[in-house]
Amino acid sequence: MMNIFEKIKKSGLNLPACPKPLASYMPAIRIKDTIYVSGQLPTGKSPMPTGAVPSEVSIEEAQKAAGVCFLNALSAAVDLIKETEDLQLVQIQGFVKCDSSFTDMPLVINGASEQALQLMEDKGTHARTAVGVSSLPKNAPVEIACIFNVLDAGMPSYSGRYEWFDPSKN
Image 1 (cartoon, rainbow, N blue to C red):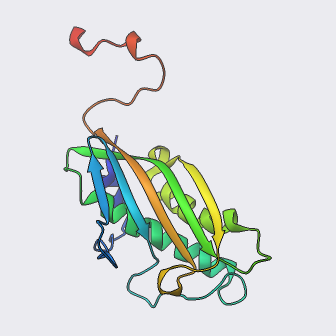
Image 2: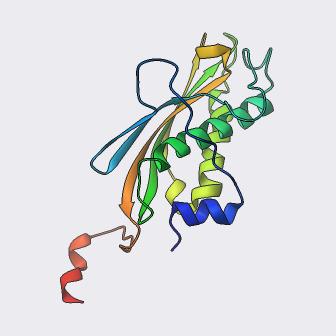
């Protein structure tokens, strides 16, 4: 099975450089085998869309922005792992700057979820929160925070009863 580094290479994507924090915090922090990624904005090569969804930023633009946020979060996480490790996405927390009558926040955050599933395949399956807010840093329409589990890329991935498999008997 391919690890995240091989999947990124295969996808043809160039992950952006890990965005610099806007204040006194780390873009991501690793505690043992868990990586907590701070909220990431849709910053990148093209100008970041700004404003509320859907009055100033269309749902489609916001979905694309959410995908960029996920790539920035992934970049922050990848900076904290070795080439012999892999990532499992655990959770996406999504925040959408939106008009008070807007209720389709999950539709916007799908941009991040779909990016995760496309790039990470089975290891991109995740739990998720999608919340509407009145403002975000730099007037961004969306912000994404993530939690990843770090896996040893050399170990097989089993879902089920681990006691059925005893690696010491191989």
